[in-house]
Amino acid sequence: MAGRLEYTVVSLLDNGSKLQGPAVARYVDRIRRAHPDETPAQIIERLEKTYLTAVTGSGSAVGAAAAVPTIGTVTSLAAAGAETAFFLEASALLTLAVAAVHGISPHDNEQRRALVLAVALGDTGMEIVQRAAGRSAKNWGGLVMTQIPGYQGMNHKLLKKFITKYAAKRGALVFGKVLPAGIGAVIGGVGNRALGRGVIDNARKAFGPAPTHWPARDIVIDTDDFTVIQGELQR
Image 1 (cartoon, helix red, strand yellow):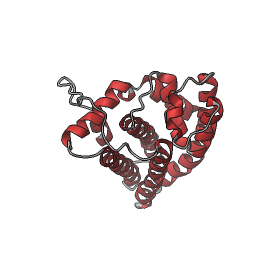
Image 2: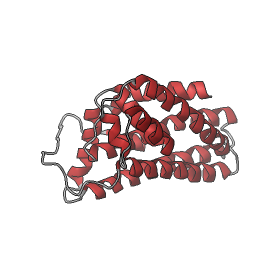
Image 3: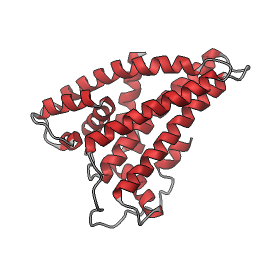
Image 4: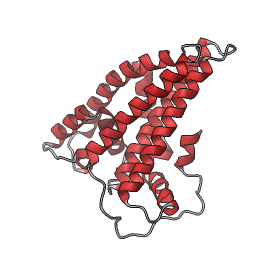
């Protein structure tokens, strides 16, 4: 399972076009256009709410599917695997979107991978990043953007820690979701919500309080791409 998770995480962070900087910026800008009078803090709250609703719903849906007599355990496990990938993608998107509100935009795959994994790990991720950067910071998320020697070595440590931690928590949750008689739906929804709250709390610690105002720039409007990432959270 760990090997499969590692492949999923690396593929998501390195090849997911939806998580590229411009796409994340359009996602945030779309929400800003819909709510032009809201502060950065209010926009972040919206991002968090959308994320939590999405991952809770996806967990409940997989659990509910297990209660259908015609759906076997193998099929339910396959659905849970796909939902795990969705959870990872949604968590990565939340992290990068919140970072964008704070004016932090990773320039390449290594920075993006480091930021997402470090936030997912919380205090453990913070320690790895601060050790690699050679200094500490209260709002440590921005350290990923500094010139850190040996990015690949740091990311290797982050990835291994993440797989170990995530596989243990997620593995038990996946099998709980496929329990019959509707039990899986409850476990899936509650479990995903708890994991999602952890990601939100970690992001708040990493980036600190939201900026008090938006930077002086125009909101990006891309008329050719209004199918922005928010739709992905409603698949």
